[in-house]
Length: 308
Image (cartoon, rainbow, N blue to C red):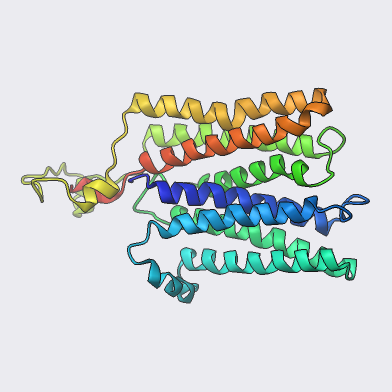
């Protein structure tokens, strides 16, 4: 599939924003540390996550043929994961606004905790809905894979966890956040390595014979349907050399896994370095997600390529 920059930016930036919202919501739902709401760091964190989500959503409009008709996506929530994603994203903004207003006004803490928990649940549901847009497409075997949804959620949670200490008083080395980040990095790396190994072995792409009802025959194309490139060959049959793909996989793994591991170790050994090590780890993870997401699209092929 053609790796459109607008969709890559949307899934990575909005994913990081939803991940930060999820962790902030959980932190609020389970009770923030003493003095958490005296400063404005948590509020800035909510707004920073909102900015990431908004930029990602805005970039997705660049991929639409008729952006003015985007509102119609909200009406198909019964059957469309894209519609569910849109509705959940709007609900997230509502939950975030509630958390922000209640937190700043000092209303009843139970209301604040409930709004925080709702924000966390809606954020994770939105990320999973985004992933299901691709995981539900059976004509693209590389996307219809059991690890697509966990990988999307893993990237969002990892980037959000790495950004969390920047906006709250959560200490990396004195609690479970360090172990959470470590588990997310290792789990995400393992999931992507397994995913890449699976698609290298060859997904269950039907043969031409199976496509025309002759599963035990070898069918060949006598005459191609066109003489030059068209929309289908440009959008659904993107070609990336295997050696280039392996190189980019290594780059992605180094950025979203190896470098964050080193920086997490440094932050745990010397807590004073957390002020720059954690934002740098988050930036590396985001850069790795961009490379990984480009590969996610570039290595996927639609079944229509059996004909074209």
